[in-house]
Length: 260
Image (cartoon, rainbow, N blue to C red; front, side, top):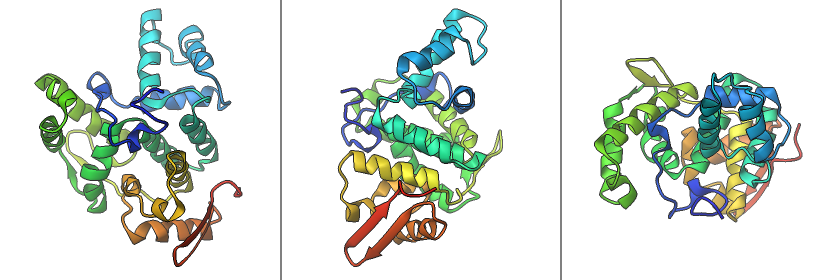
């Protein structure tokens, strides 16, 4: 199986860090255009045809179309035969606003990329919770420099690659709606939306998380939720009928499907 591998590399402790963001950012705008073209659950071959053959992303050359396809697929899976992407697509269709779509795409990127996952849960989360807090490329670079002492793949990156990853990550955070500003970026604490939370639940179930462990999973830090706040958030989403949740003692009932 791809991704070091397992169904959700962002939750796999042994998944490697990739420098996917060194050349370009998260390409969220291109993802939106592709999904606006069709929300049907397509195979990887069919998505590739939309990008490369039909040129739905309006690239000038065949080489540019092939390149953008390769980069989008590396970030977002783009294959309805893969459970994580299939779950994302279900939630994308249920999004009711642009901020909800941005957060849902961010969650997919993080679940598919261990580096983005760790940056989100370990580094970005405190800044989101203190929003507006300054988001500095130098601090992202510091995270990567520390990672280089623990991970051989990061140690092998050049200084140029680490700097590029840090810059593109900061730009991507803004693109997903988690920061604002251009030269000086400050964080924006995400509002509570159903789709990104449900996608996290889907991912945790894919890796076999039990209900009680699920509500305490640190991956919810991607959305700036910690500790008991996860339970509170699930309770609020239950009140909004975005999912069904009840917890009594150690018994957790959570249904993300039987909702509108």
